[in-house]
Image (cartoon, rainbow, N blue to C red; front, side, top):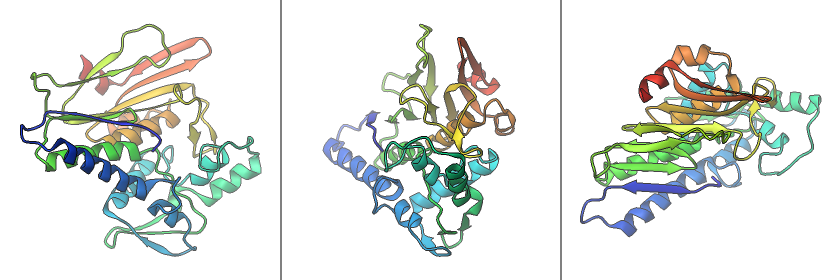
Length: 291
């Protein structure tokens, strides 16, 4: 995933630390082997290479991420779209590397080849149909899902108090040994000197999508072009890391359209910069969480 992971946890006295770390590494490796669009042998890349009309049998992890992605795509009117692999490559953010700025025709072709509405899911058989030429890209949800998976792995090994962080997406379970919740600070993305917002992650997750670390790399699937709404950062608190990750990506693209936020009752902090004007928007649910 091109990032680092951190786990802070309260271990039982007899815990096998080395074995636990090996299990975490193996679990993350398995997720990468399924969802990476950089590894040609991954489950995702194998799906992308299928012939038109072929069906792929999905692993449980892959099926769960696809199902969540399709739900968020529907709820956001396509602001979040797991089927924009060709657009990602076209704009130079995928495995082919940097590309010249694409023209209108190339963008239109990439859009017509993708789009979540072209996907056909067989929930009973855990299968997904390749309509022909469609390329999945699950980067907008995979890190959050991986953080959930590691928290679940720890719980299965009787480690119920933990903070899992993968590339900035955090999942908190239980409490710290001193009785405090797991505290997470949301940094000021524009460096205005304001103190960070501090959240208590107790049985919930926070994920941030933004353009302030790696530069502007957000694509609006509905237009095929970069976003122009001035959003610098979106942080979402939700019950799972995967949901928070996907919703943060959707809001980054969809803002200032508030339909998604109001309909889903999302807890979000949105930072917008247009010229010299900087605005921090806290949704009502988010305000209640930090009050």
